[in-house]
Length: 129
Image 1 (cartoon, one colour):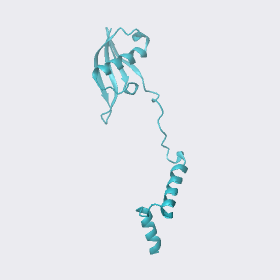
Image 2: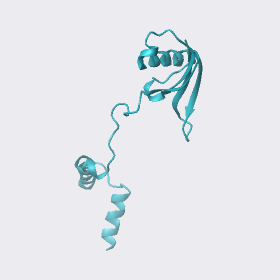
Image 3: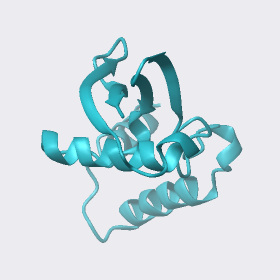
Image 4: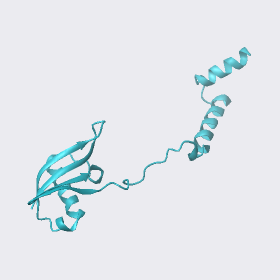
């Protein structure tokens, strides 16, 4: 039993020298596990593309010549500066619907909407015609 315990201890702490048959066997077992494990065992599928709700533009309020929209943040490239963000939001709103399609509106106010972790999930954008 002491021999088996010592073997398991050396395997667990990876103390075999490179080039020995024990080292090679451990590498082969690891590769078999990584490459041979079915994906469904983990149920961890990568998310491909934007989620179905991404890119959504919703009209929140409409007062006189001012409207407020909520733009999903996942539809925008990560902005580095405010002018770039304003340009991205203007383009997203222009693509969103027929009433803004002509692009003749100006952005008055941008408010970031954050989730519980503090990440920006959307922007509330007030536009004026």
